[in-house]
Image (cartoon, rainbow, N blue to C red; front, side, top):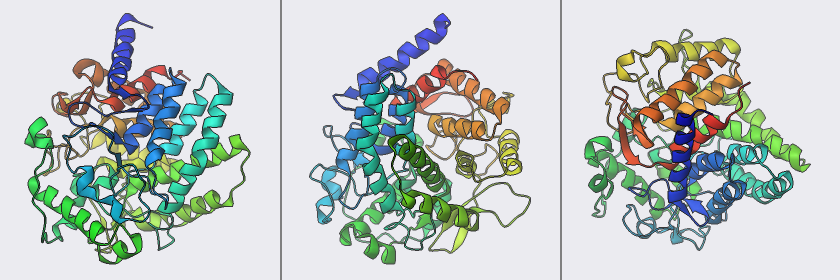
Amino acid sequence: MKTEEFKLLFEAKSILEKNWREKYTIPSPKLYPHQWSWDSGFISIGYSHYDQDRAQKEILSMFEGQWGNGMLPHIIFRGGKGYFPSAEYWQTELSEHSPEIKTSGITQPPVHALAALHVYENSSDNEKARNFLKKVYPKILLFHRYLLTKRDPENSGMATIFHPWESGLDNSLRWDEPLSRIKVEDLPQYKRVDTEKVSSAQRPTDEDYDRYLYLIEVMKKNNYDEEKIYKVIPFKIKDITFNSILYAANKAMLKIEGILGEESEEVDSWIKRTKKNYFEYFCSDASENPLLYDYDLVGRKRIEKRTAASLTSLCTDLLSKVQAKALASWMKHSHMCKEDCVHEHPVITSISVDDLQFNPLNYWRGPVWININWMLYEGMKNYRLFEDAKNLKKSIIDLITEHGFYEYYNPLTGEGLGADNFSWTAALLIDLMSEKED
C-alpha cells in the first residue's frame, strides 16, 4: 500500500474512532449527535474490515430501538440536546408498539441485512460472526415483515414511505409535487437547529420543513397506527431506492438463512412478489427511456424526475443486461458529474447539472453523496460492468482524497458540504480501499 493510501485509511479510521460512542457511531459531531439507522448499516461495513466487534455492536445497538411491530426507527436518541425534531417532539409513546428507549416515529432504507452479510463475509472469527447472524437475523426478519405487511397493504412486494425522510434522500426534487399538495394547518411553533450549524443554502427550505413536520403531526394524531395513517396521510410513495434496497436485502436474507441453516418460505415469497410487480410500478411508459421512477399512490402516477434514485435499480438483479448497460450509459452521458463534467469518469451527482432545478449546494438537489455512489458501484459489479465500476471507484476515492470526509460535495468544485468528519463517508471509503481486486 502506498504512503498516501495508508494516510487516507488512517484518517478514515480516526474519524470513526472520534465518532464512536461505546456501542454505536454518530454520523458527525457537528450536526448529528444521535444514532441513525441506515448510517449504522453503512458504518458497520467499514468496521467489518478491521474491527469485527464494533461492526457487530453497531448493527445490534440500532435494533435496540426496534418497535414491537417490527418498525426500525430512523433515529435512536442517545446523545445530548441540540437536534430538532427532538425525542420530545416525536411523542412516540403515543404508539403501543414504541420501545422504552426514545426514538423517532419513522423508518429509513433497510440496508441492515446487506450490512450484516458484509460483517459475516469480512469476519476474522467466523463462529463469532455466525452467532452475530443468529442474533440479528430474527430482528431483520421482523423489520422486513413490517415493511411488507403494514407498509404494503396492496401486497405488491414494495413498501410505502410516509415521509421524505424515510427515503433517506430527504429533499429530493422527486418529492416536490407530492409535498405541494399539503396544506399546512395547526402546526406548532418550532425552531430549526440545522441551519444554525450549516449554511441554510445547503439545507432544505423552511417551507419544506413545515411540510415535513405536518406529516409527523398526522402520524402523531393517529398514534403512529399504520392502518389509520394509510387512509389520511397525503404523502404515500412506493420509492424506487427504498424498494431496490429492500429487494437486495431480502436476497441477502436468503444467503444468511443458508449460513444459519434456516428454512423460511416467507422471504422467498416476498422476493417473488417484488419480482412480479417491480416494473409495473417503476418502469417508464417510454420504451426508449432506461430510467425507473417512484410511484405516487395518492396521485396515482409515476414521479418522472431524472435523479440518481432512478439508477439504484442496479442494486437488484431484476434488470436485464441490456437495461443495466443502458442505465450505465445514461449515467455517463447525462452530465451527472463534478467539476463541469471535464472528468472522463465522474462521480455521480444527485441530479443532472443540466436540470433546471439543479443546485450545487443544496442537499439532495445537486450535490454528490458517497453512499449513493457506493451503491451504484456495487450495482455495476452485479452486472459485470467492471470497467465502469472501476472508474467510479477511483473517482470516489479521488474526491475524498482531494476534499476530505464530508456529508456531501459540490458537484462543480468538489468542495465538501454539510457536516464534516462524516462517518459513512469514512466507512465506505474503508470498504472500497479494503476490497480485493478481482
